[in-house]
Amino acid sequence: MARRFLVIHGPNLNMLGKREVGIYGGKSIERINDEVAAEAATLEVEIEFFQSNSEGELVGAVQGCRQRTDGIVLNAGAYTHYSIALRDAIAAAEVPTVEVHISNIYKRESFRHTSVIAPVCIGQICGLGSLGYVLALRALLEERLDPWLP
Amino acid sequence: MAALAAEAGGGAAAKKRFLVISGPNLNLLGSRKTSIYGRGSLDDIHEGLRARSAKLGVEVECEQHNSEGRIIDSLQGAPGRFDGVIINAGALAHYSYALRSAIGAMLLPCLEVFISNVHAREEFRHQSVIAAVCVGVIGGFGKTSYLLALDALANLTKD
Image (tube, rainbow over all chains, first blue to last red; front, top):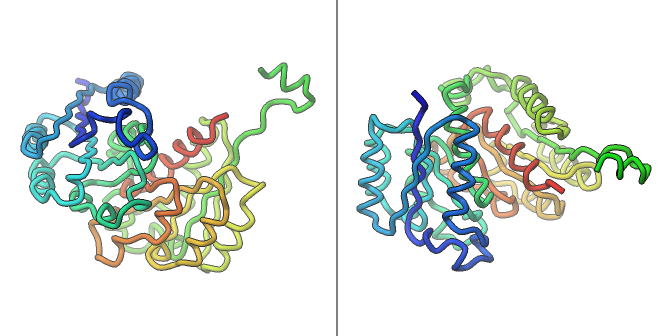
C-alpha cells in the first residue's frame, strides 16, 4: 500500500498569492498543492491537503493522522509562534511532522523567530517558497532510510 | 540548445557549482554523540552530495574547517567560483557575527543546514545569527538536510 501523507496549511494561507506577495510570493495555495501533488505522484505516495483558519480544526486534523498517516507537512502560519495546543497535538499524534514556512521567518519580526512546534517536529524548512513543501515530502520519505537519525 | 551553445563556442552550458562548508566539530561526525548526530561520517555526507550532484547535473566542492577564520576565507573566496553555498556552521551558527557578515557580503544564495533538530535541544541552540542572511534554513533531517539543500540550490539557480 502506498504511503499516505497530509499537507496542512494554517491560518491565512488560503490568501496566498493575494496578500503580501512580496513576502509570500505570487503562487496560490491551489498552485502549491498542484506542485506537491505532482511530486507525490513521482514519488508514488498518496497525498491529501487541508487548510483551515481555525486552530481547533488544525488540532483535529493533526489528531486524525494518528495511526492513519505516515507523515505530515505542516505550515502552521502564525500559530507556529504561539499555539501550544497544536504542539501538544503533534506530540500526541506520534506522526513524523515537518514544519514548513514559505518565507525565511528569521529575516522577519522577532516574534516569528520562535516556533513552539519545532521541538516536536522532526525538522524545519523555511525560506524556499513552495519548494519547501516539496522538499518536506522528500524529507519524510528519506527519513526512514537515513542512518543519520537515531 | 546544446547546438546553439556549441555554435557560440561555449560548448555545453557550464554546470552550476556549489560550495558546501561544514564548521567546527563536524569532522567528528560518527564518533561523538551518535544519539544526536547519527553514526555516519562527514565523508559519507560528502559522498552522498557528490552522488546527488551527478543526478542533478551540478558540481559540489565540500570543505570542513574547525577555524572560524578559515570559513570566512572560504566564503570570501566563493563569489566568481561558485553559484551558491550550503553551510552547516555547527555551534558558530549561534554566535558568529563575523560569519554572518561574511555571508551577507558574499551576495550568493546561501542555505543554512543542521543535522539535528536544534529546536529540540538546549536553548542557546534555538537562535541562529546567520539565518537572517541566508535564503532559508533546513534542519533536523540528518544527512538528508544537506541533500535537500542541494536540491534547493539547484532549483533556485536554474537558468
